[in-house]
Image (tube, rainbow, N blue to C red; front, side, top):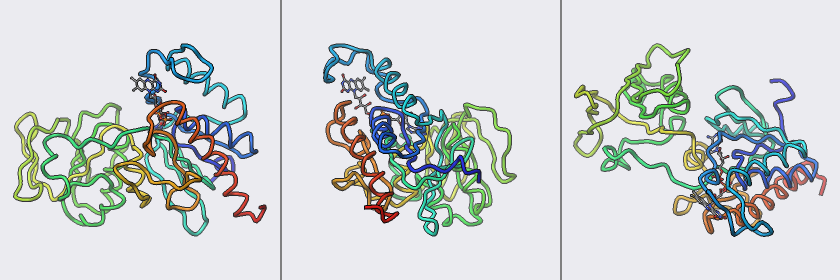
Length: 295
Ligand SMILES: Cc1cc2nc3c(=O)[nH]c(=O)nc-3n(C[C@H](O)[C@H](O)[C@H](O)COP(=O)(O)OP(=O)(O)OC[C@H]3O[C@@H](n4cnc5c(N)ncnc54)[C@H](O)[C@@H]3O)c2cc1C
Protein backbone atom coordinates (compact mmCIF):
# COMPACT_ATOMS: atom_id res chain seq x y z
CA UNK A 1 0.00 0.00 0.00
CA UNK A 2 1.24 3.46 -0.89
CA UNK A 3 2.71 5.29 2.10
CA UNK A 4 0.36 8.23 1.51
CA UNK A 5 -2.50 6.02 2.68
CA UNK A 6 -1.04 5.70 6.18
CA UNK A 7 -2.21 8.24 8.79
CA UNK A 8 -1.79 8.81 12.52
CA UNK A 9 -5.50 9.45 12.96
CA UNK A 10 -8.36 8.27 10.75
CA UNK A 11 -11.63 10.01 11.62
CA UNK A 12 -14.93 8.50 10.51
CA UNK A 13 -17.26 11.49 10.27
CA UNK A 14 -17.02 15.11 9.22
CA UNK A 15 -19.62 16.54 11.61
CA UNK A 16 -18.84 18.68 14.68
CA UNK A 17 -17.23 15.78 16.59
CA UNK A 18 -15.09 14.57 13.68
CA UNK A 19 -13.96 18.04 12.64
CA UNK A 20 -13.15 19.05 16.21
CA UNK A 21 -11.12 15.82 16.65
CA UNK A 22 -9.28 16.70 13.45
CA UNK A 23 -8.53 20.26 14.57
CA UNK A 24 -6.99 19.13 17.86
CA UNK A 25 -5.11 16.18 16.39
CA UNK A 26 -3.65 18.32 13.58
CA UNK A 27 -2.61 21.07 15.96
CA UNK A 28 -0.81 18.39 17.99
CA UNK A 29 1.14 17.47 14.85
CA UNK A 30 -0.63 14.29 13.75
CA UNK A 31 -1.45 13.37 10.16
CA UNK A 32 -5.23 13.31 9.87
CA UNK A 33 -7.71 11.95 7.36
CA UNK A 34 -11.45 12.59 7.78
CA UNK A 35 -14.13 10.56 5.98
CA UNK A 36 -17.40 12.35 5.31
CA UNK A 37 -20.30 10.91 3.32
CA UNK A 38 -22.29 14.11 3.69
CA UNK A 39 -24.96 12.94 6.15
CA UNK A 40 -24.23 15.06 9.24
CA UNK A 41 -27.27 15.73 11.44
CA UNK A 42 -26.20 19.38 11.40
CA UNK A 43 -27.30 19.69 7.75
CA UNK A 44 -30.88 19.30 8.96
CA UNK A 45 -30.63 22.14 11.50
CA UNK A 46 -32.04 25.28 9.85
CA UNK A 47 -30.97 27.62 12.64
CA UNK A 48 -28.40 27.11 15.36
CA UNK A 49 -28.95 29.70 18.06
CA UNK A 50 -27.44 28.04 21.10
CA UNK A 51 -23.76 27.70 20.20
CA UNK A 52 -21.23 29.78 22.11
CA UNK A 53 -20.29 33.08 20.47
CA UNK A 54 -22.60 32.74 17.48
CA UNK A 55 -26.06 34.25 17.79
CA UNK A 56 -27.48 32.60 14.72
CA UNK A 57 -26.11 30.44 11.91
CA UNK A 58 -27.51 27.71 9.69
CA UNK A 59 -26.35 24.17 10.42
CA UNK A 60 -25.05 23.87 6.86
CA UNK A 61 -22.91 27.02 7.22
CA UNK A 62 -21.49 25.98 10.60
CA UNK A 63 -20.57 22.61 9.11
CA UNK A 64 -18.86 24.19 6.10
CA UNK A 65 -16.93 26.60 8.36
CA UNK A 66 -15.63 23.66 10.39
CA UNK A 67 -14.61 21.64 7.34
CA UNK A 68 -12.78 24.63 5.83
CA UNK A 69 -11.01 25.29 9.13
CA UNK A 70 -9.71 21.73 9.53
CA UNK A 71 -8.69 21.61 5.87
CA UNK A 72 -6.65 24.82 6.31
CA UNK A 73 -4.88 23.16 9.24
CA UNK A 74 -3.72 20.40 6.89
CA UNK A 75 -6.22 17.60 7.50
CA UNK A 76 -7.29 15.63 4.42
CA UNK A 77 -10.99 15.10 3.80
CA UNK A 78 -12.30 12.28 1.65
CA UNK A 79 -15.93 12.25 0.54
CA UNK A 80 -15.89 8.47 0.58
CA UNK A 81 -18.29 5.96 2.05
CA UNK A 82 -16.65 3.91 4.81
CA UNK A 83 -17.70 0.27 4.42
CA UNK A 84 -15.59 -1.64 6.92
CA UNK A 85 -12.95 -1.23 9.60
CA UNK A 86 -10.46 -4.07 10.14
CA UNK A 87 -8.31 -4.53 13.22
CA UNK A 88 -4.80 -5.44 12.03
CA UNK A 89 -3.72 -6.95 15.34
CA UNK A 90 -0.18 -7.83 14.26
CA UNK A 91 0.63 -4.36 12.94
CA UNK A 92 -1.21 -2.57 15.79
CA UNK A 93 -3.08 -0.53 13.19
CA UNK A 94 -6.60 -0.32 11.75
CA UNK A 95 -7.57 -0.57 8.09
CA UNK A 96 -10.48 1.56 6.90
CA UNK A 97 -12.07 0.19 3.74
CA UNK A 98 -14.05 2.70 1.68
CA UNK A 99 -15.92 2.55 -1.60
CA UNK A 100 -12.72 3.67 -3.34
CA UNK A 101 -9.67 2.65 -1.32
CA UNK A 102 -8.10 1.25 1.84
CA UNK A 103 -6.39 3.41 4.45
CA UNK A 104 -4.23 2.51 7.42
CA UNK A 105 -4.56 4.38 10.72
CA UNK A 106 -2.50 4.13 13.86
CA UNK A 107 -5.65 5.30 15.64
CA UNK A 108 -9.31 5.66 14.61
CA UNK A 109 -11.91 8.08 15.96
CA UNK A 110 -15.54 7.07 15.33
CA UNK A 111 -17.73 10.18 14.94
CA UNK A 112 -20.56 8.78 12.84
CA UNK A 113 -23.40 10.53 14.66
CA UNK A 114 -26.46 9.29 16.49
CA UNK A 115 -28.75 6.43 15.87
CA UNK A 116 -29.02 2.71 15.90
CA UNK A 117 -29.94 1.23 12.55
CA UNK A 118 -33.65 0.54 12.34
CA UNK A 119 -34.60 -2.98 11.42
CA UNK A 120 -37.02 -3.03 8.43
CA UNK A 121 -40.57 -3.45 9.79
CA UNK A 122 -41.30 -6.91 8.29
CA UNK A 123 -38.10 -8.26 9.92
CA UNK A 124 -38.73 -6.67 13.34
CA UNK A 125 -40.53 -9.68 14.88
CA UNK A 126 -37.49 -11.81 13.98
CA UNK A 127 -34.79 -9.62 15.58
CA UNK A 128 -32.41 -11.77 17.61
CA UNK A 129 -32.98 -14.87 15.45
CA UNK A 130 -31.29 -15.41 12.08
CA UNK A 131 -31.29 -11.67 11.30
CA UNK A 132 -27.81 -10.11 11.41
CA UNK A 133 -26.30 -6.63 11.01
CA UNK A 134 -22.73 -7.76 10.28
CA UNK A 135 -21.53 -9.96 7.43
CA UNK A 136 -17.96 -10.16 8.68
CA UNK A 137 -19.20 -11.31 12.12
CA UNK A 138 -21.86 -13.85 11.14
CA UNK A 139 -21.18 -14.77 7.51
CA UNK A 140 -19.28 -17.90 8.50
CA UNK A 141 -22.46 -19.45 10.01
CA UNK A 142 -24.00 -19.53 6.54
CA UNK A 143 -21.38 -21.63 4.76
CA UNK A 144 -23.02 -23.19 1.67
CA UNK A 145 -26.41 -21.78 2.71
CA UNK A 146 -28.74 -19.24 1.09
CA UNK A 147 -28.82 -15.73 2.56
CA UNK A 148 -30.34 -12.37 1.68
CA UNK A 149 -28.93 -8.89 2.18
CA UNK A 150 -31.56 -6.17 2.54
CA UNK A 151 -30.21 -2.78 1.42
CA UNK A 152 -29.76 -0.53 -1.56
CA UNK A 153 -26.33 1.09 -1.50
CA UNK A 154 -22.60 0.49 -1.54
CA UNK A 155 -22.63 -0.84 2.00
CA UNK A 156 -25.23 -3.50 1.07
CA UNK A 157 -23.11 -4.48 -1.92
CA UNK A 158 -20.03 -4.75 0.27
CA UNK A 159 -21.91 -6.98 2.73
CA UNK A 160 -23.16 -9.18 -0.14
CA UNK A 161 -19.60 -9.60 -1.46
CA UNK A 162 -18.38 -10.50 2.03
CA UNK A 163 -21.13 -13.15 2.38
CA UNK A 164 -20.51 -14.55 -1.12
CA UNK A 165 -17.18 -15.94 0.15
CA UNK A 166 -19.04 -18.52 2.27
CA UNK A 167 -22.68 -18.70 1.21
CA UNK A 168 -23.99 -20.74 -1.71
CA UNK A 169 -26.31 -17.96 -2.89
CA UNK A 170 -26.69 -14.34 -1.79
CA UNK A 171 -29.84 -12.45 -2.76
CA UNK A 172 -29.31 -8.69 -2.68
CA UNK A 173 -32.81 -7.36 -2.07
CA UNK A 174 -33.18 -3.65 -2.82
CA UNK A 175 -33.53 -1.07 -5.57
CA UNK A 176 -29.83 -0.37 -5.91
CA UNK A 177 -29.10 3.36 -5.95
CA UNK A 178 -25.91 3.02 -8.04
CA UNK A 179 -24.94 1.06 -11.14
CA UNK A 180 -23.14 -2.15 -10.21
CA UNK A 181 -20.00 -2.80 -12.20
CA UNK A 182 -18.64 -6.04 -10.76
CA UNK A 183 -20.46 -8.76 -8.91
CA UNK A 184 -19.50 -12.23 -7.66
CA UNK A 185 -21.24 -15.05 -9.52
CA UNK A 186 -23.28 -16.28 -6.56
CA UNK A 187 -24.88 -12.88 -5.86
CA UNK A 188 -28.33 -12.35 -7.36
CA UNK A 189 -29.74 -8.83 -7.47
CA UNK A 190 -33.42 -8.72 -6.56
CA UNK A 191 -34.65 -5.17 -7.31
CA UNK A 192 -37.67 -5.31 -5.03
CA UNK A 193 -38.73 -4.27 -1.56
CA UNK A 194 -39.58 -6.56 1.28
CA UNK A 195 -43.35 -6.93 1.83
CA UNK A 196 -43.60 -9.77 4.34
CA UNK A 197 -41.43 -12.24 6.21
CA UNK A 198 -42.52 -15.74 7.14
CA UNK A 199 -41.03 -18.40 9.40
CA UNK A 200 -41.46 -20.45 12.56
CA UNK A 201 -39.27 -18.79 15.22
CA UNK A 202 -36.80 -17.65 12.54
CA UNK A 203 -36.84 -16.17 9.07
CA UNK A 204 -37.55 -18.83 6.44
CA UNK A 205 -39.17 -16.97 3.58
CA UNK A 206 -39.06 -13.41 2.24
CA UNK A 207 -42.16 -12.25 0.36
CA UNK A 208 -41.42 -9.39 -2.05
CA UNK A 209 -43.58 -6.48 -3.21
CA UNK A 210 -44.34 -8.29 -6.50
CA UNK A 211 -45.50 -11.41 -4.65
CA UNK A 212 -42.38 -13.47 -5.43
CA UNK A 213 -40.94 -15.52 -2.57
CA UNK A 214 -37.34 -16.28 -1.59
CA UNK A 215 -36.45 -19.16 0.75
CA UNK A 216 -33.48 -18.16 2.91
CA UNK A 217 -31.43 -19.47 5.83
CA UNK A 218 -30.55 -15.99 7.11
CA UNK A 219 -30.97 -12.28 6.46
CA UNK A 220 -28.45 -9.44 6.74
CA UNK A 221 -29.68 -5.88 7.18
CA UNK A 222 -27.49 -3.31 5.40
CA UNK A 223 -29.67 -0.31 4.65
CA UNK A 224 -28.07 3.10 4.09
CA UNK A 225 -24.44 3.54 5.17
CA UNK A 226 -22.26 1.70 7.63
CA UNK A 227 -23.24 3.26 10.96
CA UNK A 228 -21.51 3.44 14.32
CA UNK A 229 -23.74 0.57 15.40
CA UNK A 230 -22.41 -1.70 12.65
CA UNK A 231 -18.81 -0.59 13.26
CA UNK A 232 -19.13 -1.80 16.87
CA UNK A 233 -20.25 -5.20 15.59
CA UNK A 234 -17.39 -5.41 13.07
CA UNK A 235 -14.73 -4.58 15.65
CA UNK A 236 -16.24 -6.03 18.84
CA UNK A 237 -16.64 -2.64 20.51
CA UNK A 238 -18.70 -2.53 23.70
CA UNK A 239 -21.95 -0.53 23.63
CA UNK A 240 -24.49 0.46 26.26
CA UNK A 241 -28.06 1.37 25.28
CA UNK A 242 -26.98 1.55 21.62
CA UNK A 243 -24.23 4.07 22.37
CA UNK A 244 -20.50 3.36 22.16
CA UNK A 245 -18.96 3.00 25.62
CA UNK A 246 -15.83 5.13 26.12
CA UNK A 247 -13.57 5.91 29.05
CA UNK A 248 -12.58 9.39 30.23
CA UNK A 249 -10.16 9.71 27.32
CA UNK A 250 -12.94 8.77 24.86
CA UNK A 251 -11.20 5.48 24.08
CA UNK A 252 -13.36 2.40 23.47
CA UNK A 253 -12.45 -1.06 24.74
CA UNK A 254 -10.15 -1.36 21.70
CA UNK A 255 -6.71 0.24 22.15
CA UNK A 256 -6.35 3.14 19.73
CA UNK A 257 -10.03 3.32 18.79
CA UNK A 258 -11.83 6.37 20.13
CA UNK A 259 -15.41 7.61 19.72
CA UNK A 260 -16.93 11.08 20.12
CA UNK A 261 -20.10 13.08 19.61
CA UNK A 262 -23.66 11.81 19.27
CA UNK A 263 -22.41 8.24 18.75
CA UNK A 264 -21.41 8.02 22.44
CA UNK A 265 -24.78 9.38 23.61
CA UNK A 266 -25.47 12.01 26.26
CA UNK A 267 -26.42 15.55 25.19
CA UNK A 268 -27.04 15.38 21.44
CA UNK A 269 -25.87 18.92 20.70
CA UNK A 270 -23.08 20.62 18.76
CA UNK A 271 -21.38 21.98 21.89
CA UNK A 272 -21.00 18.54 23.45
CA UNK A 273 -19.87 16.94 20.16
CA UNK A 274 -17.20 19.63 19.74
CA UNK A 275 -15.98 19.04 23.30
CA UNK A 276 -15.91 15.24 22.92
CA UNK A 277 -14.08 15.56 19.63
CA UNK A 278 -11.45 17.91 21.07
CA UNK A 279 -10.70 15.47 23.86
CA UNK A 280 -10.64 12.44 21.55
CA UNK A 281 -8.27 14.22 19.13
CA UNK A 282 -5.86 15.09 21.93
CA UNK A 283 -6.06 11.60 23.42
CA UNK A 284 -5.47 9.87 20.08
CA UNK A 285 -2.20 11.78 19.68
CA UNK A 286 -1.26 11.02 23.29
CA UNK A 287 -1.95 7.33 22.61
CA UNK A 288 0.47 7.35 19.66
CA UNK A 289 3.15 9.05 21.74
CA UNK A 290 2.75 6.50 24.54
CA UNK A 291 3.03 3.67 22.00
CA UNK A 292 6.23 5.27 20.70
CA UNK A 293 7.57 5.59 24.27
CA UNK A 294 7.57 9.36 23.86
CA UNK A 295 5.78 10.18 27.15
C1 LIG B 1 -33.17 18.95 12.85
C2 LIG B 1 -32.02 19.07 13.81
C3 LIG B 1 -31.81 20.27 14.48
C4 LIG B 1 -30.76 20.40 15.38
N1 LIG B 1 -30.58 21.58 16.01
C5 LIG B 1 -29.55 21.75 16.87
C6 LIG B 1 -29.32 22.99 17.53
O1 LIG B 1 -30.07 23.94 17.35
N2 LIG B 1 -28.25 23.08 18.35
C7 LIG B 1 -27.38 22.05 18.57
O2 LIG B 1 -26.42 22.22 19.31
N3 LIG B 1 -27.58 20.86 17.95
C8 LIG B 1 -28.63 20.69 17.13
N4 LIG B 1 -28.83 19.46 16.51
C9 LIG B 1 -27.95 18.32 16.87
C10 LIG B 1 -26.59 18.37 16.15
O3 LIG B 1 -26.78 18.48 14.76
C11 LIG B 1 -25.81 17.10 16.51
O4 LIG B 1 -25.71 16.97 17.91
C12 LIG B 1 -24.40 17.12 15.91
O5 LIG B 1 -24.44 17.29 14.50
C13 LIG B 1 -23.67 15.81 16.23
O6 LIG B 1 -22.40 15.85 15.70
P1 LIG B 1 -21.59 14.50 15.34
O7 LIG B 1 -20.32 14.96 14.76
O8 LIG B 1 -21.57 13.61 16.52
O9 LIG B 1 -22.49 13.75 14.26
P2 LIG B 1 -23.01 14.25 12.85
O10 LIG B 1 -23.05 15.74 12.78
O11 LIG B 1 -24.28 13.54 12.59
O12 LIG B 1 -21.90 13.77 11.82
C14 LIG B 1 -21.73 12.43 11.47
C15 LIG B 1 -20.70 12.37 10.37
O13 LIG B 1 -20.38 11.00 10.09
C16 LIG B 1 -20.33 10.82 8.67
N5 LIG B 1 -20.57 9.39 8.40
C17 LIG B 1 -21.45 8.56 9.02
N6 LIG B 1 -21.36 7.31 8.51
C18 LIG B 1 -20.40 7.35 7.55
C19 LIG B 1 -19.85 6.37 6.66
N7 LIG B 1 -20.26 5.10 6.64
N8 LIG B 1 -18.88 6.78 5.80
C20 LIG B 1 -18.44 8.07 5.78
N9 LIG B 1 -18.93 9.04 6.61
C21 LIG B 1 -19.89 8.68 7.48
C22 LIG B 1 -21.39 11.77 8.14
O14 LIG B 1 -21.16 12.10 6.79
C23 LIG B 1 -21.15 12.98 9.04
O15 LIG B 1 -20.09 13.75 8.51
C24 LIG B 1 -29.87 19.30 15.61
C25 LIG B 1 -30.08 18.12 14.91
C26 LIG B 1 -31.14 17.99 14.03
C27 LIG B 1 -31.33 16.68 13.31
